Image (cartoon, rainbow, N blue to C red; front, side, top):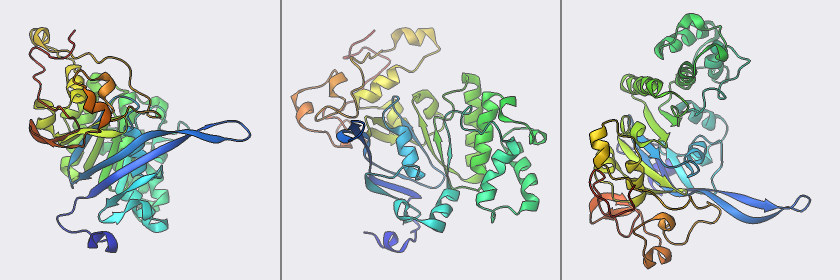
Length: 351
């Protein structure tokens, strides 16, 4: 254990957030009176990464791969089955009482659905100002109204609408309210759990631009979760691709989008819409066979092998480690990792 982990201090070269082998397994039970465990859903199963100050880590993958569970673990809405996470040198899962409340000031979250994440019986002023009730040291009572109005203006809303209710705003405006609430306590990290997936494409761009402006002005670090690679590309410094509870490829934005080596990442990239019909006609489309396996019974060896066109016998016997491969120095969890030009012909099934 590093000295900073024992003392709770942070070295200058240490990442803001460090996660090691984090796992969350949910028991499957059967019976009414005498419930017994019959299986385990491995929602998150051994995830490791770091996040530097002012950096954006994009996490992408299909629905059900464990992205939202990972987010809930980091803000202590769920407790881990195994693993650890350190924020500024302090173990998140060992924090209690005042120390945990302080963590929640520094580590905030923007929820996916702007229609259900805001209390419909509270005004916008009450919603954005509610964090000050829990952390009164941030804003004295006499200054809270002005502080809330400043936050609304900061995210592009009319501060005079402080007394309105959520149903009086559009989806994009509601998400801006959620962002204002997350900013209220001056956090260092904001976890964005698919913050634009429920919005129109034009509104998505506005929200992404707002997040980038806030990051530039306030030095925020983001964990940006999405299932759309085209959205993640515009905001992320590094990208982690997640499948069935584990990262299968990680790297800087350029490495993932220009030199992807894992077949799953390549399939996701081939599904990104292309507006130019000339490019679309020459674009490789990789169609994956079958459905995503159940996280309660993942395949042996490589979890992606049941849908992979490269799968061989070793893939069922040996789980590939997330490590740099010969094809490219960024980590990939594939025995046969190689770059694939999506814009040209395919060795995979095309359509």
